[in-house]
Image (cartoon, rainbow, N blue to C red; front, top):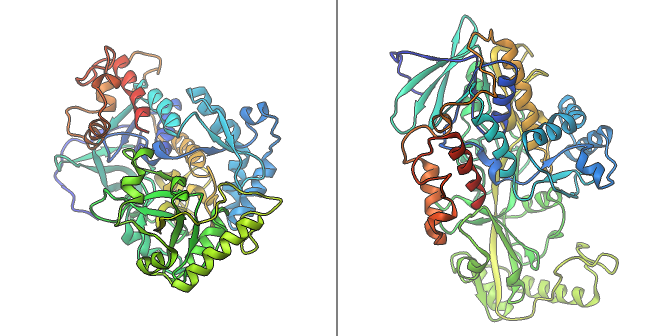
Length: 553
């Protein structure tokens, strides 16, 4: 365990401590408060939301939106889909999520002010079940955060990394947190501690340590997880005696473009070119480029090296889509990607392209000739990407110089294992006995293991909300609720202190204003009379500031 100041004075007390203010932590805090508990949420960053603010949607079953669009869904159908796609999911949590995601996630979020507008069909769900707001899941996080901000029973502690759990007489009864700016240790005491710290996919050492034994470990593995997914919660849970299950189950994406602005050369952007073909080192295609993620994962992970080259021509250069970089606009793709010699090789003919990219010249030349012939005939007889019955999208011959090759790599994304939890979201040991006072939720737990061996579409955020609510409710029930409970409809005195703390120099402050400078925005794009440039002092000012999150996310 990290070094701790054993002489720290004056602990801060509450009924429930939630470690991590991501989507699971916010759900836990709201539910614990609704059950009558006083809550302290401790977050290592300066803002809430975690990776969810940049994520997509939530998979939920038999919802009002589905019914309004005439989609017939049921818990049994959803459960069978989870079994089929995940192959070895935790059946208890898979069944529970299938049964409860409609009323306990969808309906609950709608009551908080979330507006779901779209349903997207995906291969892992037999009916459209992937719910989106009008934008990314920042529109799910913000209503949750607004409700927490206005709740006087929830207090936030920012820029504080939890270093250790406290235990007395066999019960977890608090944490030690270190302020990341001052280095000061503080002790926080509570009857219940909920760990909701997210995954470990930002920690390459831990990723490699837990790599699946039946898969080749890539020589070059990039990072695509949130900046604070460093594995702290796993270390804390393991120290407490948790049964650490399925730690080698990880979601690895295989379309990682090295971030051109990352000086460490370790971070990835999610990249896709729907007008291109993929080849391995021999210059040969090896997969249906439009296939599902499970098929692509299996195909790419068997390549040597574990990466591939995206091949396209001047027409196909317009097919790029790149995510996870707020600064990157479509108008910048030529400069940042296509004409960037560190990322992309260009040539006037295919033979020259193969030599420059280090690919087998005969293999690549034959592959391009075969591809162009298949496009002409209207049928991909190699991998069935398109046929006369299934036309496919953006299917073009590769024949207009210049020709390009861009290499993509695997990158980390999500964790699907962690401390085991029971039906009350209590952390349990390897004999199934609950660890008194300790609860866990969200990605830290592998969302209960509902994904089995393969992550699904929307089956992380939704289960994070459900397990967060369960952990918060259980933690509140475990508490003696000795703290003074204030009715949530009473006026909060200082939302600023609750949400932002005091002073400037926060990580997110620097990031957001760097983005403003990058885009050349005027201050009035975000600031107005209700959202002044100074630190907000009134509830309405803080709530108005939350609206600016969507300018970037």
